[in-house]
Image (cartoon, rainbow over the protein chains, first blue to last red):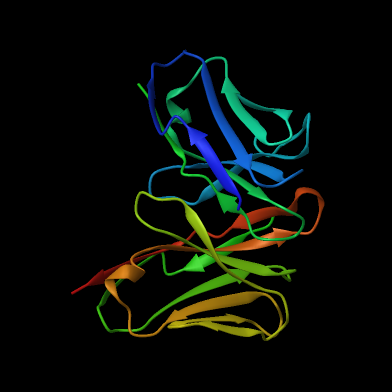
Length: 111
Length: 112
């Protein structure tokens, strides 16, 4: 069966510090991968998606970036965090035109 | 860009009452998916609707896709405390990447 992992679960970082969030998927090959951000009590905003290794599409211009160094690994990064980067970051995967499966998420607080 | 609006934003019901959330789009939807997010949790896929006028049921949940494929609804009969959470509809973008555009969500609270 397929599983998706995200870490860390929670993170508190000062403004201006770097960020690296990792997501890995097991049990499937060549998945579509997604990064979403959810502000408290709000909906899901798609940040990045990837249809293959090294292929990244950005949905929202910002100080975040994403990379996909391996088929089932998706990384979200920032060189310098802003207060507005606080939120709940969710990774998800899908195959073809089907439903998306979400990881447990990372709660990021920028102080 | 695509806009998918959901109403209501919040709903408080007494256990046993029915609940409905509506999803509306200004454009024709290719298909629609519904997700549930429990408090503190991550979204979990419930169902996908593809055909005009389609109706699907999962126990106490009834999902409907409008005839014009511009709206959808989720109806819960006789709510239970386990139904608490936020319900999102999401439109699939049939271009590259199987992207989803999520609705604004309806937060459901069920009181005993």
